[in-house]
Length: 243
Image: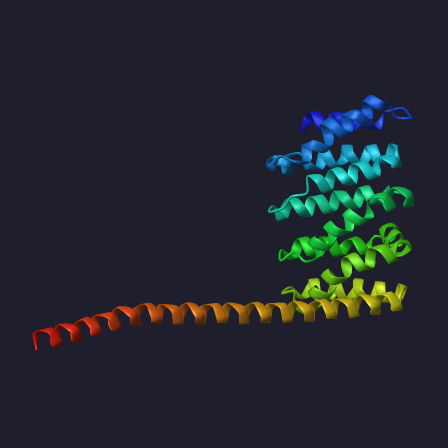
C-alpha cells in the first residue's frame, strides 16, 4: 500500500511522452493488481496510479479499460462498486477515439451491472449517466450503446426490487428517448418481441416436460401392471392344472 502511494507520486512526475517501459509497467504490473481478492486493501492507491497514467496519456484509456474488464469481479459486489468508481475516473480522462475502441465490451459489462440484484452495483452503474463528460460520449455514440443497454434498462423498470434503482433507470431511459426517440421505439419493440419469444419458448419447454413426465408415469404404470398380469396368468394356469 505504501509502495503504491510512492509510485503514485513517481508516476505523477513522469516526463512526456511516456517511455515504453513505463507503459509496460502499467500493463504487466499495475493492471493485474486488480485481480487479488484482497485488492480492497490497496484499491484507493492503485486507482490513483491508474488514473495518473491515463491523465498523462489519454491514449492509454482503451488499454486500461480493457484491463479492468478482464479482471472484473463476478461474485464480489463491494469490489464491483470500486471498479465502477475507478472506471468513471478513467472515462473522465478518455477522449472520443479511445472511447469508441472499447465501448462495445464496456457497455456490455455496464449492462450486466445495471441488472445486478445487488442494488449498490446497479445504482453505481446508473450514476455514470450523471457524469457530464461520460453522458456526452454516450450521446455521441448512442446508436451503438442504446441497443446494448436498453434490455437491461427495460428489465429494471419492469422488475427490479429496489425503488431507487427503478427511479434512476427511468432517468437514464429518458436520456435515451430524448436523444433518439425513433431508435428508442425500435429497441423497445425488439425487446417486447424477444420477451414474447422467451415466454413462448418457456411455455413450449414446460409442455414438453409435462408430456415427458406423463409418458414416464404411464410407462411406470405399465411396468407395474405387467408383473400383476403375469402373476394372474400363472395363478390361473396352476388352478387349471390342479383341477
